[in-house]
Amino acid sequence: MITIKTDAEIQLMRESGRITKEVLDLIGNQIRPGLTTKDLDKIAYDYITSCGAYPSFLGYSGYPASICASIDDVVVHGIPSNEQVIKDGQIVSIDVGVVFNGWQGDAARTFLVGKVSEEKRKLVKVTEECFFKAIENLRDGTPLGNIGYAVQSHAEANGYSVVRALVGHGIGKEMHEDPSVPNYGKMGTGIRLKKGMAIAIEPMINAGVYQVDFMPDGWTVRTRDRKPSAHYENTVVITDNGVEILTL
Ligand code: MF3
Ligand code: CO
Image (cartoon, rainbow, N blue to C red):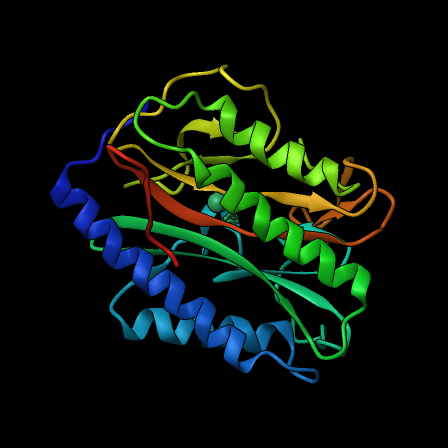
């Protein structure tokens, strides 16, 4: 079921979205070689709880942390660890969810650590561009398939591929609501987005093949060819004449 948010509910989602964005800004300012992904997880947990909010990933289907930290060929859902030291030249995607006063925010950034190859820099840049292409013409009445079309065509025009096994989603009182928001699709297909719908748009773009492998830890998703992957996500709400980004 797709829920339509009232203005008062959107105001509450602005608050959780703001905290979500602040966590990512904080991590972006701190991330450097030598820190562990667990250090970043602690930064997120401490900040979110200091706001009187809760990290929505923690305990979700048994997930053991407040963020996902996904390095290089890890697409998404990397579990923070004391053993995983961040190194110069890596691209590190951080995904975080916040629930505040019962409302969810969900966002991700891929950070460049130190001296990153031109190849990986471009992948990160194009992945961000995919998100902005997707929201360019989004408003009340836009078919959902236009999002996937925009992401896929921009990624593929740059020689990259789009992950199919994981998708964006509606968001509100639950982290994952209807509809599913694939990063592939055809113009003019799917349900029409309506004012007051909130969705998490999250391109996951691979430098090589689109296929992924699910690791035995039950969470970590890697590219099948072990080439790098980038992720960029924001929670947005549909308005009359466009979208409002709640996590930027
Ligand atoms: N942002 C992600 C999503 O939209 C991550 C969820 S990870 C989990 O699905 F740990 F919460 F499961
Ligand atoms: Co999400």
